[in-house]
Image (cartoon, rainbow, N blue to C red; front, side):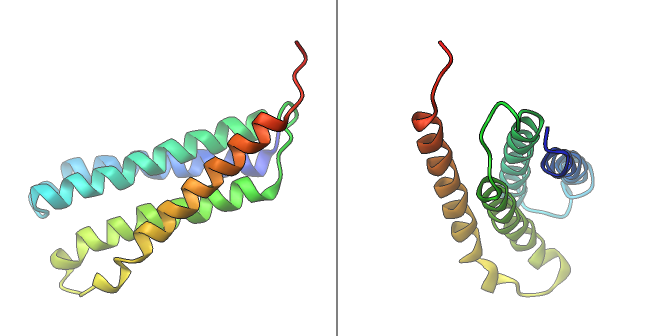
Length: 129
């Protein structure tokens, strides 16, 4: 087990649950339906990658892991999900955060590249059966 990676994954999951509940209960009267749907996409992707990091961290001995996976998933999730949260909130808080618009696809690209890297590493791995 890699404790640091597992804890980081669990933190992302916990924050995802908190943000999801906040969005569903506190933001439903503040955000438009489109903004709320976008916010939920950010939460969903944060949860997916938190769960992925938790699983990889708990199975670090069975899987040959390096820092690249966790940097990719962490940075990608922060850029992708948190830029969505900010973009959804900008109208409600009265601050123009539209400059963060390009950050979302950059975060998504990092997530995609990290998944491709993981797929390549898995395909190269030797199996026991």
